[in-house]
Length: 94
Length: 220
Image (cartoon, rainbow over all chains, first blue to last red; front, side, top):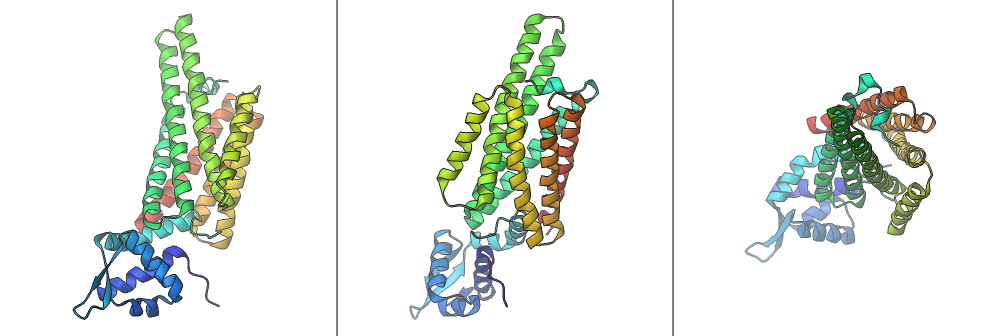
């Protein structure tokens, strides 16, 4: 049985998908991140508010997401932050 | 209720150096936790950062006031006024230090409880300060209370190690176990100079482990 992913892992997975393709449609992120539609929208909203990703539109008016500079920096620092939080048990949900 | 007066003669000065070391390590952990909080926005990380900030301030205050008290006492050892001012400084240092440490440990204990109710934190803080304020022997009460909090905190990190067995979780669990032992034995020996030094040595072992864990995290 797969273990439940922690929040920071989900954030990392979403950002990783966006970084791999530079500009990504929401459907692709939804497919790759393996989240419910509701959770996906919540995460996208939170990441946009935190300025980790930004929403743009292509010539056809289709929504696309790309990483901000802060998002790139976060991904680079993610490994250390995750290790730190894991070592102190800060990732555990209530 | 002086702390620096408990230091054995051979240990004088080393305690200040060690307290400064503990302050620097705690501050480094707090700053990294703030960075982690900015990235994750997790409540537990924010509480962790806040608690280590207070713990760092507590050690810094302890080191500063111990240094000032020793300076006052050694400048004019025969002057009653100088000695009195050294005692005042020392007492002020102890009160500042234990107040800041109580806040830090209360927040860390609240974090391990993983409750959403803010009132729990206020209750822990209120009871802690009432106990310190009303106690006849503030220092003994402080050691009993802080040891109880450290036992809860150490259990949280031991439990974290049981769930995620790796070198980093083990390092943290061991560090907080050392802190608990270093603090708990002071309950029974708060007037013993050798135990004062032993407490600092155990704290040093704990903070060396925290530093080692920090190195392992940053090396990644």
